[in-house]
Length: 214
Image 1 (cartoon, helix red, strand yellow):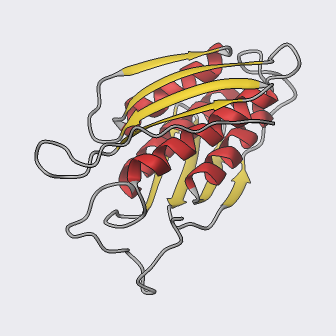
Image 2 (cartoon, helix red, strand yellow; image 1 turned 60 degrees about the vertical axis):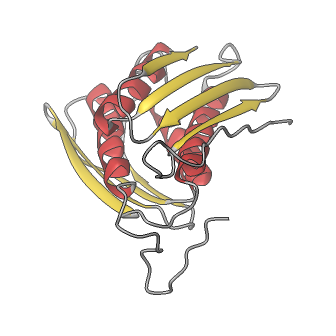
């Protein structure tokens, strides 16, 4: 499987601060994905995927995270949505990682519990270089937006791998599967916003004085 990665992260903005923008392109026999993110300038949100419900979730992520996000993602959904959902998670995580330019000078950790009607989902993230996903969402035996909702675990696992992060996703209450999935994306957005908030200086927020951001 062949994939290519491009990064357009600029070194500085007009005020001398590093510009936290990046584009990553991944092309394989199964999926073709391009994602561009700007962590600090909300407003531009353009989401185009072969799965309308996935597009809706990514739009929710951008809006609630206050990120500019441009996604163009297609794949072999006639085989199974699995490939596109997983690879989109990988590329989104990789794009945010590239935009950060490393783990120095950020809050590093964030968490948010998002209520959506009768559903409540907790998401906690540590952008620390250690890839780990703890997933505690449960779904019924039916699809949401023509997608098996269990496939979103693969999105989150891909996201963790691309971002080099530890992530916990836990369902506290559920009234229906649509609300649970959507609450998870909105909680993820808010947690990532917290974790990527810049700090004064440019040090690793770690007692070790370093994090593995290679």
